[in-house]
Every structure is written in structure tokens, then in C-alpha cells.
Image (cartoon, rainbow, N blue to C red):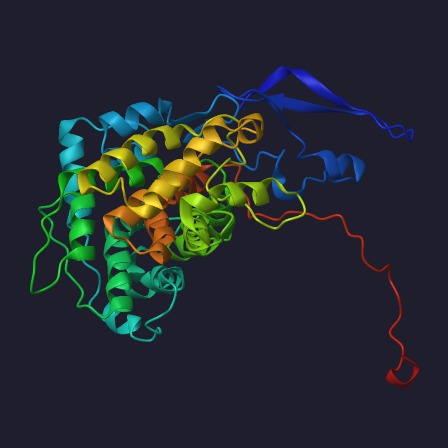
Length: 436
């Protein structure tokens, strides 16, 4: 990075000397002010709860313009990638910086698809969980345990270890998610079939049984592949920042990704599509479409605790570009399965219509986001609501790995250590217990 000729001057009204701060220009997006020497020169920190105005790293992977509703993976618009590339091509792009040619794609696919099996002991490890455990509780344990099963690829500072760990994680996550699902419903695990596509293989492991094989439906497989692609990376969000922070300590890649899985579980992050479907179920129990006006009235009432899930986004102040693509897929899947008249899906489409037309939502730019549509698609396919976030984790794994690898290769990276504004008690003496 080369600083700009323009500098920011920080001045103080208390008579402290002013200081010049370097400014760095990104290839696109806002400039950043380098405050690394601020504490050393002034004894002061910046205060930025949630890091909403702080760049924690420099990155070449993903760019978001929330005002324009733009999402780029390595410079490519998500709209073009979702239409012209499959998920494994997107994985190759995120990991390597360029889209693969035909030979590179075939080699990468072959490598991933021949690492899809997991150690047989993993199924015995699963037995330690209750059958009704949330899939994300299971996934946090399984991903973290991979370092115990694959200890030949746990040195985060070894490029070869990072590469094989990346392939293993991308390849085995669908197997682990399907195993977690099969365990909760008491069905036998289905081993991967490497001659299927990545998404097709996942669907088969989810829905096949020993007594009746599953023939993947091309429309549904394409929908699942698109869900994976649209969720592959999303810049420095909470779970990605968690993976980077965890990895900055030098821990192994599996532990860092397990930390990302745990963070993603939260309802404000990866659990949003699960929360959205739960909201639709709640409205359905209230009386469905007939009660939607009453529900919307509660949403608008500031004194109520009713929230509209699956609408609006913290970063996108315009329409979520992933939502446009997922909306197409949503209607394609509902059409393929003949579900347009299903009460829950009719309710969802009515809610979508209101949010796109009602002045209250339009003025606040509370458009349907990707979680709204992906939740509907997954339910239509037959995926249970508690598994939605685990599928999100599966898709996001490649983004976490790409970000982790980028951080390790950055000569400026240091162990993460945020500072604080302390507002607690000043120094005081401990009194004997009789005097307290």
C-alpha cells in the first residue's frame, strides 16, 4: 500500500499538538485514514463500537457498495457469477484471484470431489450429541474436531497445510451438514458420490436413503448451487472478522473456521433466514394472509417488539443484489414443485408485495433481502428450518478460508487486539471482609 499525497490533519482544542495522518486510497470505495500511530503520538484511541467506521485490514477479495447495491467477488459482479459460473468455479476464484479455465476447473473439481469422505470415526463422535441438538451446535463441534482427525494440515503458517485444509473443508462441509441432518432424524448416513456435482452430491446425501436412492432434480440442484454462490463471501462481516481474529493467534485453520461457524449461528447474522421462516410461521398461526395487515401494523408500532425479519440489510441501503437473483430462483423452484398455492408461500409473496409497495417500507428501504428468499427456497426443497444456518456455514466456508489465507500472507498482519474506553471504577483498596 502506498499512502496518498493528501494527508488528514488531526487537531485538538486542548492545545495538544496536531498530527498528520496518512490516507490510503482503495481501488474502489472509500479512502481510509491510517491511525496506527495515533496512540503512540497522542496517548488516545479512537472509539468505534461495532467497528462500523474502521477498516481492520486491506483485502483484494470482496467489495460491497451498500448505497449502489453492488457486490463484487475479485472484481466480478455477483449478478454475472451467479448466472455464468457454478459454486466450485466461484470457490476457485475466491481462493486464487482468477476464474479457472476449463482444465483448471476440471482439476479443482476432481480434487474437491475426491476429498468428500470424512473419517469414519466422525459418525461415532456424532453419537455424543442429543438427537434434538441444533445443527449449528453439532457443526461447531464437528468442524472444530477436524483438527483432531486431520492433524497433518493444522499449521496455519505452512502454505501447503493451508491449501490442503482449504480443500478438505470445502469438500467435507456438505458431508458433515448432511450427517448432522441424518443424525437428528435417525436415518443412516449416505456416503458421498463423487460423479455428481457439488450441489447434487449434497442433495443426495441429504435426501437419499439405503432403500430408495435420490435422483437430483436439476432445478433444485441449480437453486442450491446458487444459494452457495450468493453466500460464498461478504467482506468483513461478523463471522469473517471472527475467523480472521481467531486465525491471527496462529491457531489451526479448522479451529478458526469453527469459530466462524459459532459466530454465524447468531440470529442477527447467519440465523436471519431461520428467523424469517419462524416469523412466517408465526403469522400463519395468527391466521395467515388475512392477518397480515394486523402484523404489519404491529411492525410499524414503535412500542411493540414485533420485527420484520428478512427485510433490509445493515450494509445494503439499496436493494440487496443477491436478493434479486434469489427471487428468480425462488419463483423457479416454487413453479417446479407446484407450491405457489401453498399457504406459507402465498403468505411470503403477499408480504413481499406489501414491502415493495408500502410507503413505510419503501421510504426506509426495507426491501426483501437474500435471507427472505433463500429461506423460502430451502423450505420448498425440503430442508428443515434449523438446518438453514448450517447450509449458510457450508457456503461461507470458502470465503472464510480465502480471507484467512489472505491475512496470513499479509506482512502487516498482527494478532488482533482491540482497545477499549474504560468507564469502570478507578483504583481502590481492598478492605478486610469485616469492613465491607
